Structure formats: C-alpha cells, structure tokens
Length: 95
Image 1: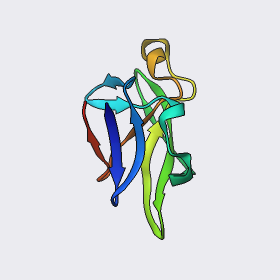
Image 2 (image 1 turned 180 degrees about the vertical axis):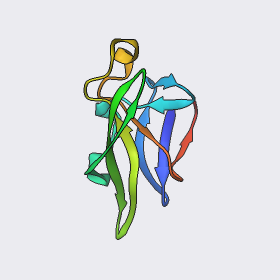
Image 3 (image 1 turned 30 degrees about the vertical axis):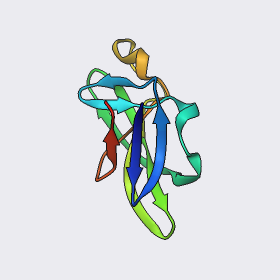
Image 4 (image 1 turned 135 degrees about the horizontal axis):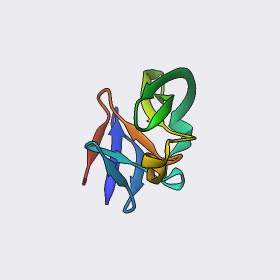
C-alpha cells in the first residue's frame, strides 16, 4: 500500500500506483480531493507532455503546486493519464 501525507494528513492511499521517474502516481479514486485545489500552474515535460498542478491544502496551510497530473499525456506516458503525483515536502511511503 502506498500513501501520501502532508502536515499529518493523508492525501492519497492506493495499492495501484504507477511509478515513473521515482514518483508514485496515484489513481484518481485514491485521492482525498478535499485537500486538492486546482492551480493555474503548468509545466512541460519533453516526453510526458503538459503537467497541470494542484495546491495541497490542509486546514489553513497551503503547499502551492505540490501535486501534479497529466490530463493528456504523450503516448509514451499514457499509463499516468489523470494520475496524481506529489512533491514539495509531501511524504510518499510504500513505493
């Protein structure tokens, strides 16, 4: 089982993550969406495509752009479509 936590709060839990470049990508149904707020931030990966971001929110604490996903990945990254990965201090255990 793989979990993601920040500020003592579980953000995701799944036994069906996909690992790419050392990051665990969680399926949409495993996320505690009440802690994710859409962000306008995007980045581009040459082989995965355009990443879109969420701010992670726990109480009054905000971790800006700490989660990302690929809604329309390039074919080489099709396995992570709509899955969410974390960084910026979010602890992912069990990968």
